[in-house]
Image 1 (tube, one colour):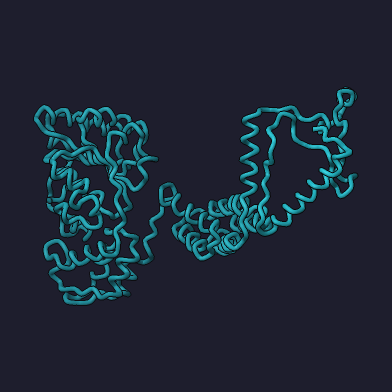
Image 2 (cartoon, rainbow, N blue to C red; image 1 turned 60 degrees about the vertical axis):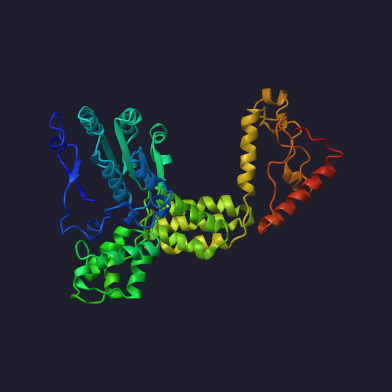
Length: 463
């Protein structure tokens, strides 16, 4: 396949007198382009790492075989071949391909593409719109595109790194097939590197370079499954080598500078990594807890966001099994606000490790959930008279406060009357756990209930 480059669409559709809209025509790729761009696959069977879609019986191979391209959304991490696949599919269909980036395009651009597509249909041409970063399109922009995708006037090929179920409107998504691409594994990345080293036309094949195992491992294991990063790092590491030279691990290290941290503070990776941190602490795994914490902080996450999550986790997952955990998390939050990064990593690590090693109880979360459910079910039940504050003579005459027992005046501090309103379904809201400190707390609660029960034989419970 020839690589496609953006030009003014008026050259393709002179009968449509509108502005530029980034249509695509075949154009040779400059040798000055990055190695990853030069090495784009030219056929579907050159795509690596996505064999479940491109291999025999795969959706994309079947689309090519049938010669009928449906609207699709290609979803996957960076550097996994979304753009290459989209252009291969569109080019194979013999249609006019118009490329837009959702980062800079708007409704006006969509309208121009639609006008061009109508003109192309009159001439017997189909129009494929390749919309990169489709998750950046607003709902209004997606709605403007919807009827034309539904009618088949425009075949949509969207590419996104974010979950389309969350970022693409349900109406538009229902008109598209979603293809979830996988991060490239070490074998797939190694194949890309070998092709680049062997290809004398587009790659580095004319130079006879050698890639030793240590340097190869760095490129296949430290690039986050991103083929673009791996190829461009190889090119940079080899830039100063003489022909026939060996790519040194030190050169790869300099080219990578630091591991590629796939992380978007507003996207899927953000939520996945946060989820991994929370579940690692909940699962009492201190190694995983500090790893995911470092992933977030090294990728530039707001440390106060991390601190807030630890505070929530201390109350939600450690709870009464270790009541001190909330104080540790709050201290980490205050320290983070006071000192900032990079030093804030230390109190955050201390808190994450403490929470991971602490006994776990979610009884507080369950108790509140049960209480809120009963509140929604029963509404605003009247406060029992003995619990109402008797402020005025009228209040006292109405019986406010009558029968109330002050716990400080009772044996063992235990009262015999209840504190819940009449009409509330029976059954406990708080179910005590047995781990850590909550075991003693629950035993104390059991003793108090037993004492209240004994005394209630001679003192009725008024509420």
